[in-house]
Image 1 (cartoon, helix red, strand yellow):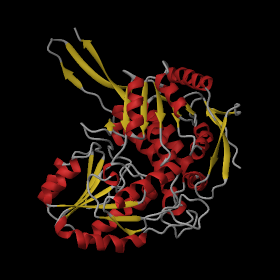
Image 2 (image 1 turned 135 degrees about the horizontal axis):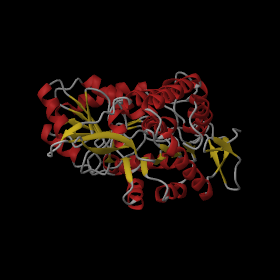
Image 3 (image 1 turned 180 degrees about the vertical axis):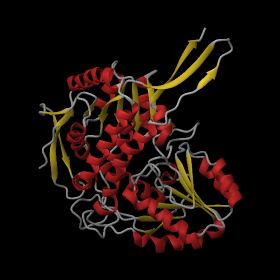
Image 4 (image 1 turned 180 degrees about the horizontal axis):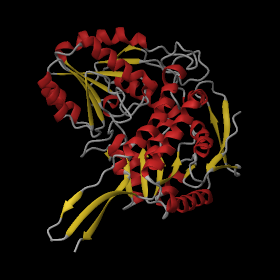
Length: 478
């Protein structure tokens, strides 16, 4: 068993009386008994963050950037162990995905370091003689970063890297089901020279999240997770600054002139990467009815790329689902679709003969309608639901009828059509002729206005703006 201790204000602390048992979705074996953070520990972490922030806010941007680069190098140096922990606790393939997650984690610190140097202000003309208005960016204060289990280390770093780069302090709350790679980062932060108290890592459930959100010493909330949880956070946070990236149900849109082989391969990849447990995964495939039959055959051919198995086996591209609620939702969505007239072409049920019953093969459903739960809701599993639509107008209308609006993909060989879909799809990002799972650390990733996907951007220079204040100084020159 792994020894589990919370990382509080720059040091690991001995466990308290309350623990939860964490088991691996890969093997079903106990990884560790994880101590649960207490209210007193949250209070201590926030108080330490406030003290550390009072000094750290005055560090120069180049000092903060150097610190972030040191963290990035240490993450790279410990790639194999961090990736091993990620696979063991979350289930994603070690070679195909977990190592990449750790590489992206390191990159997030480096990208934030360089972007912070480019948070420029403005000199604004005044209406009065002898006055100048100068704007600059200033850290907000103490952030709470509440992050999910699907990319435990990388998404925590999506808030931690920008927080350090911009002069903020942060208390991170990764989930108590996938805490170990996140906790392992603690020693690396200390080695890099992160001031004691500036960062704490306190895994926990909803009660700890609520304590952080409502804590009077917390100035701002960063959250990645479900829309339902996001709504509860926003109501509890009141006027605190918040950066919210919630659920997605972004469609893969396949137009009549699409390269069907490329579109099918991208749709399948978007369904099995991280076992479909991605906020921008292939959740519904909207295909022009004139090419639907041919496209479906291409999807069946492409589905062989999803090789289910032991995630520590280098041949595996699809590991187990991370937890039982996700597997149960997959089962419910598939059975509901079949009951209402859809047809299972590939997969369709949990696989037998594995150490846990969380191994779920890639599933392809044909004859799906927009009213089915598998198309209306975020399945968060390895499923390709194919919905036929009559022409571009119907494709757009069906895509935009969904209340979520994170990221979509559109496949077409027409530049005017690509521009039309890019401008009219109600999502934060549109990927043309590639998977909905396409992502870069410098990409401003987030939801569209008028949807239940949140606000602000995770990634790149835009996130650093969202995690700082615009301050204005007005000078009299006379």
